[in-house]
Image 1 (spheres, rainbow, N blue to C red):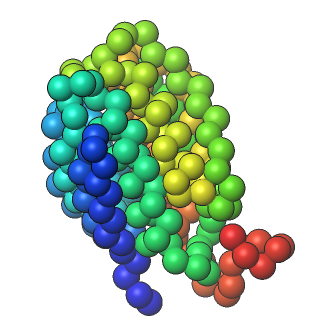
Image 2 (tube, rainbow, N blue to C red):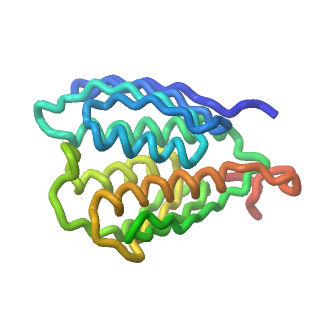
Length: 196
């Protein structure tokens, strides 16, 4: 079995991003975006999804965090899509309900090739650390659309914004790990159409 990995670079007037991703990893991560809490979330995603991930970003943080976080989502989505290749043999669907202290978040996804985000995670503060909380949705939107992923994220319970966001990133990692995993009974792609 081939190790599924990808390396994507993207440079604009606003950001310069390099991401290396291995779907068949052990949860090793190095994230350097200039936004400490966002780095922590990317580490949580990779660690609990058992992906090896390296993220190096130079963004226009003197403006705000928007371009850095959104563009990182775009490149991560592209890396997931590239690493998946033809998607033969994968389970395609994945979900996880993750508790973190008082918080409970559901993540459910389909690697269908059809992008969609259903995001129902209300947050009550403007930022956690130096990360604007409105960028959580923008990140997941960018990942889902650049990957071609149907992604649902829903807060089932919770009070602390740090816990809620971290539960979302961890649940996303666990759900994606389930979706990209192989099943020996699936010999082609898991679709009645014959392609994903």
